[in-house]
Amino acid sequence: MMGSSIAVSLLLSGHPIIAIAPIKGEKEKANLHIRKLFRYCDKSGLLSKSIPAYLSSLHITEDFYELKSCELIIECVVENREIKRQVYERVEKIVSRDAIIATNTSAIPISILQQDLTFPERFIGIHWAEPAYGTRFMEIVNGSNSLPLYANWVYELAHEWDKEPTLLKKDIRGFITNRLMYAEFREAFFLEKCGITTFEDVDKAMRYDAGSWMTFMGLFERMDYIGLDDFKVIFEAVFPDLHNGDGVPEIMEYLVNKEARGTQDGMGVYQYTKEEAESWEESFAKFNKDIYRLATEFLEERNYSENEFLERNK
Amino acid sequence: MMGSSIAVSLLLSGHPIIAIAPIKGEKEKANLHIRKLFRYCDKSGLLSKSIPAYLSSLHITEDFYELKSCELIIECVVENREIKRQVYERVEKIVSRDAIIATNTSAIPISILQQDLTFPERFIGIHWAEPAYGTRFMEIVNGSNSLPLYANWVYELAHEWDKEPTLLKKDIRGFITNRLMYAEFREAFFLEKCGITTFEDVDKAMRYDAGSWMTFMGLFERMDYIGLDDFKVIFEAVFPDLHNGDGVPEIMEYLVNKEARGTQDGMGVYQYTKEEAESWEESFAKFNKDIYRLATEFLEERNYSENEFLERNK
Image (cartoon, rainbow over the protein chains, first blue to last red):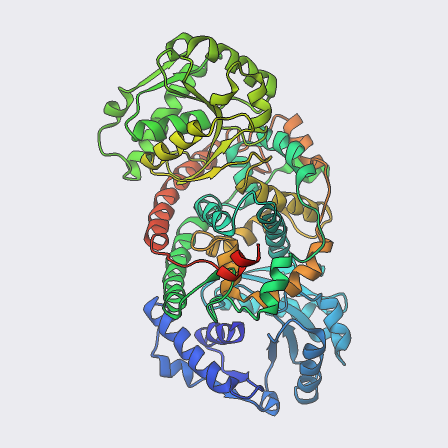
């Protein structure tokens, strides 16, 4: 899914794309999925030319050899080091010595994946948010053996993809955003397990509370807006009470063992009919367009900066 | 600030309001602030009559005795148990035996505050989100000694305030949403302290990543949409690596000692000129209107429910 979405984003930015679909049946599936995404983009007013005009720059193949002249290879296979290693091995045999190889991983450290490359210095993380063609978020991550010039080059280029990238000089598990979200997931699973809330109520509360300001302000702008003094008191009370467990929630084990794939097969934390899953994707595409416009309207005129007292105290 | 915002919300819903401002100078300040909020509401198209018509149902006073005939008293003073206790004592001496006394606290458990009341069974939590007049979120919380009929009554009434309330049968520190947000704050302060990121980059990442979907989907809808299997792998890798500290971040101690009040005095995690702080409040009021409308458009036709396999396994 993510691969198709990234391909669409790069096609929208005018790049020619070679998409590798090595698993049997995936080529046809990817083709259909990319066309579907382009129809969403069309409905959302994201296209400046016809869908066939974009698709003429796309070539889907099972043959890695066709990557030969590519300057940037973005791997987005399953989060499994051995499978990724095999992909990098095949890619490195084909591409030029200075082609950049990037991964969309959000699970495995760049510094670790890097160890499996012949030329690790050209390996970086490019972490997209879903849907890749409709969000501005991007984390570009150096591993401990990356040469900074590669990430810097992609960082500059990413602005042409209509992104607002963040450049991480240091590799950390989960990068920034995901670490913050996973801290939230960890607590939410715990509260559900204790019978204090339900998954549905967590989602309702997130949409109506955080969802009512997150596009406008981040955590710390929020804190400044609400008033700092109360926050300190609350931190004192709540931090020691938060869940600190290491383990994967049992319910996740259960769902993954059941091969639940969420909206893709209608079975996840929720269950969806085929129609619900489809209308969900369509209305999210429409929502994306609206939220993207809203963010543009409100986010581009901020001149204040971090409190200089803080700077001095560091 | 929150008191004014709650007063505006209830005035918009047609309730007559007695607002208690016992501290010297607060009465005038509240009056000005409430008028300012009404001007934002007006600009946002939230008013169905003139501002003076709403204000005619508002009476601001320092005299607790004027609460005598009130059916519902909402306390929103500073997060300090002793100050709250003094407020409850004064209120209980004046109001009728079956008036509901509620707190907007998000720091102190309802079950603890309740111990300071003569009639604890009529005490509940009503937790609003800022701005109270422009968000649909509300948590209504029973303490361990609350009689459920009071919370149930407020729960029903809250729908007339145009809220989407959640009813918590069990009291827990921080309730639902705040616990999830504080888990995020804890991790964010940690990452900043380690030099991995800055407050500004956390905010940027939140606005462009979480902010691009949070209004549309909660955490678990998100997980279903992205695909469950990768999440399990990531949880395994990241949960053991998250920060589990108990302490209040030093930088918070420092800011609070400096009496930094965020946008209210221009000094917080960021620093704001008077103009920036004002334009921030104005544009957030405008944003609120837009996001409220967007949420309404996308959130009201969901029929899917929690996966029945999960239900069966509980």
